[in-house]
Each structure stands twice: as structure tokens, then as C-alpha cells.
Length: 233
Image (cartoon, rainbow, N blue to C red):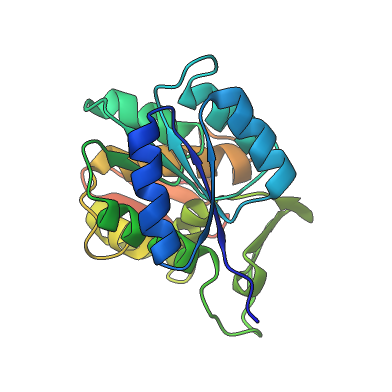
């Protein structure tokens, strides 16, 4: 019997959490609910979920601090649930390592679809023989492993998909909409800074000098291209 994938909901509003639980369980997921940030951290450490739905505004530790602490130890996909509507609020979560955000109010069916999408990204079927080699950088799509100078670097599923999309086409310029489609799917309604936030995180993890990127280069007014570790343009 196949083990059900596990979803941890960290949400202090009981009605919202219960509604999400019912929809996700109906979709076949095993669901655990935590009502505050500290309880959510304990549940994540004890249960090793496959994906986390994290409310931004929590009592005690807020969602941003919970995200930061989770990211210090894990690459589990994190979808932030937020009633805050400004780009700055959303980007703050993405820059701390969240994979996606879902603004409130939302449809529980949309949340289920987003959960499926992020889990699909984190376990996509690939050619087991494919390995991308560049100076100081190695990418293994089969197990979503990235090595910089021989050392394994932990990337979130979204960060990995953006890097892989760029690295499979060195020199090609991708605009932000193209990278959003590759990382989130064609129906994602994001904004330019969504990609920028993930690229910022990628550079922090893989670039020897973030002020002069040699892998992911900005093409001003357009988007990004992958240089393969050569001199930045």
C-alpha cells in the first residue's frame, strides 16, 4: 500500500485549518494541524511532512520567523498563506525560502491544486542519467542535487526548477513569465518579484560573489540567463 503524502497546516484560525484539512484529506493526503508557530516547528521536526502550509500571521512566532527556522534545517516545500496583499509582504516570505504564497481569501480547491503542483515539482520524473556539469557547479536532476565546488547545496523545489530551467539552456535569455511558468506552472498568477526573490536566494547559495554573478546573470529589462560559471556580462 502506497504511503500517503503528508501535509502540515500551521494556521491559528480553526475554521480555516479545519476546512483545509477536510479538502486535503479528501484529496488523499495525510494532514496534521498546528495552531501556532512553536507547535508547528515541533510538528515539522517530529513528523517530517512532505509539504507545509504556513499562515503568515500566527500568535507567538509569526510565519516569517517559522519559515526562517524551517529553512535553516530543511528544504521541505513551504506554501505561505497570507492575508497581507502588498508585494513587499509576499516577497519577504519568498526571500526567506517559501516556495509559493496563496493570498487569503482562497478556495480550498486552489490550495489542493497548489499542493499538488509543488509536490510534483519536488518529485518530477527525469532522465536518471542526466547530469549537468559546469565549472564549480554540478546539477543532478534525478535527485534534485546541486553541488558547488563539490559541496552539496540545499535548494527548495522552486529554486531548483528555476536553476534547472536556466542551466539546460546556457546563454538563452528567459523573461520572468517564462521562468514563472517553468517553476510554478502555466496557471500561476504571480508577479515579477516572485522570480527575483528566488533568484536572489539562488545567488546567495551558488554564486562565489553575489555582487558579480557568474552563473545567473541579469539581462536588464528582460530577465535572466545562465552563463555556466563564466565571467558575468
